[in-house]
Amino acid sequence: MAVKILQKSCVSFPILFFIVQIASVFDHNFKMSSGVILAGLALAAIGYGGRALMRSSKIIGDTLSKSIPSSAFSNNKYYRGGFEPKMTRREAGLILGISPSANKNKVRESHKRIMLLNHPDRGGSPYIAAKINEAKDYLDKNSRSGQ
Image 1 (spheres, one colour):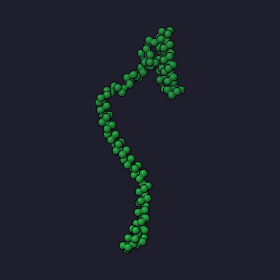
Image 2 (tube, rainbow, N blue to C red):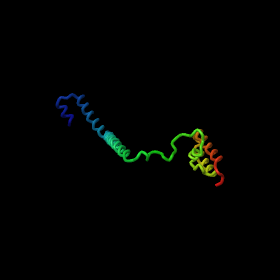
Image 3 (tube, rainbow, N blue to C red):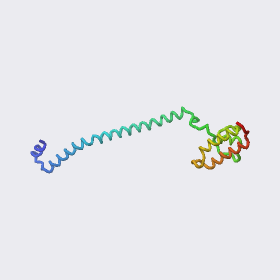
Image 4 (cartoon, helix red, strand yellow):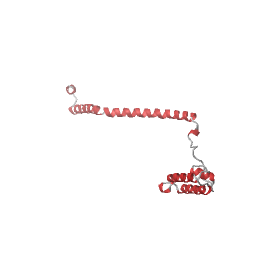
């Protein structure tokens, strides 16, 4: 019907054919592009949601940092500081994680446990392993025997 109306209005055939082709392509693409449109809308929603999340996370982070003391995030369990130039009982106890006055069996157990975790053959530091061995030797030499 549209073809007859256009023919009556003196439109040439190639232009009419072009218009009909455009209309059919548009109709076909509209059906095919509904998924693409939905995907675009989903991406836009994700973008706006992410933007809102980023804005609120800054506010939440500021609130949490004011309400929680900084000491809660620090590792107070571990000794802060380097090794002393000469091994002492206190340092040997700290290295092995035992009391400086512990008996030889406790020293051996602690040494074995720590060396399994820090052995150079298993990726540990040779320097740390040497300090662990030095601490064991120092406490073995200066500790009481027995259980």
